Image (cartoon, rainbow, N blue to C red; front, side, top):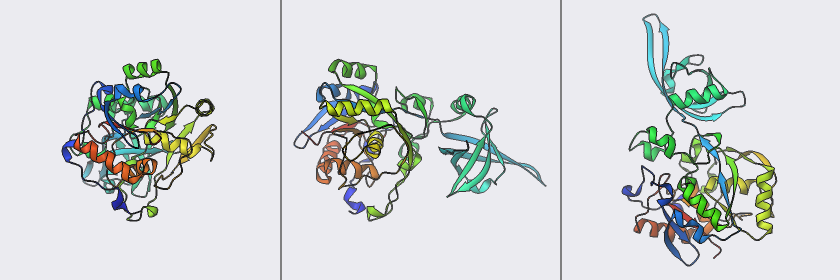
Length: 351
């Protein structure tokens, strides 16, 4: 298929720059093969059945945007250059891969100071990014990063306003646990305690898995033939307990419903051809496009995605290109809010 098959026109006014408050007051478009229903996130239990299981990504977004200074001694005295860093991915040796702006202002071996407590030495380069060795590790690093960093909001929000203190709460799920993501699993941002209580009362169960969302989720698709696109890789984990819960739900006839494309990609990566899961840990670069045979997912809760994106391809694979076009046309006509801080959809291809 061609990239243009996943394009649509979106009025700029529908791009959300702040989330709904309370979280579960956001709108929810429920789609089956022959119906579209306008609802709210708090109504989610009404569309699920006792024994269904939601799959939730418990990754925790780190405040990965840092502003610092590189100081260099020369013949004319010390010179200082402002450096902006966006952390991308931790390395096996403890270094971080990071985007630096401007990269050309920093040499390997030089140190960038981000706060009185936090600095990093440039140890190398890789494909337009830098490798940084920080002076702190573990809990000390986490505390210093929280103090010095800002949330890495998507480009379509950053272009309209800068991240602020509100985003440290807004751009984080209420069950975030495993630090390592540089982007939020945004479908989960619609959940609050009121919605979780309503799901419990309905008999809908929940399982946590972990996929650390990377900055590659925002990379544009440039290949006209989508088969030529190389998908970014992200690290994830499914525990033996989580796998057993999912297998038991399927055996009992319950539906498996990932909340977000990250959770969907992870469990589809780890599932066997018959849909069974075992404990799994590793990296996935699964690229789900129309024609893919889903092994374990029965429905999907997800936000409204960017045109011409890999996520548009995923939802089109799940529900069909033509039906997704109808869903998005309805969402635009009814002024749903789009992208990371926007509203949600519940896609149910099996009515």
